Image (cartoon, rainbow, N blue to C red; front, side):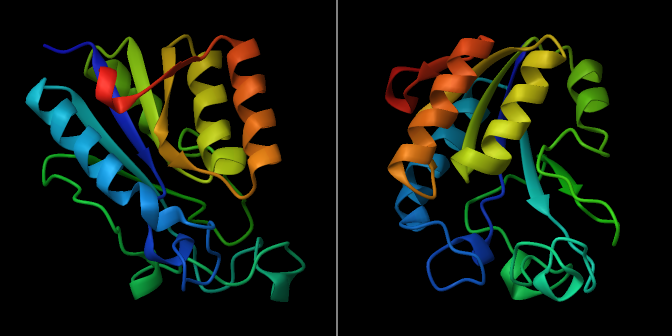
Length: 183
């Protein structure tokens, strides 16, 4: 049994160019994320896909005083995955309650239990956006004791400075930076 898992963070239509809350050039990492998924599948690793799965009236939306435009509303095209998520992947829905925000894939979900049940010791994190959900998910993985690796050629950030700061913070916290090609 593999002791590693790939966590694909929020690779959803609304976070791609043309979506409600786009990560600039987020679509450029789709082929690399798909390559990572295939690579980890071939190794027998657990694949986890996190997603924003907001109710129509979520607290993060501007109309409720939040910072974001309406995005990734449950069962809408904007919430659909844009990468090839395997049928046996664990899909983690976050920020599903109207009055609770969640950036991390661990926040208010069963992700930690799924990883523990599968004997996972090391997680590899990819997806969008580096400064928000990727960082929050990886920081929680570190806090929970997982060896945590960020796949730097399969992440997308909002801006280069913010992404650089996020990666520096993650490294200081103990995350390793890796490339999909070298895994």
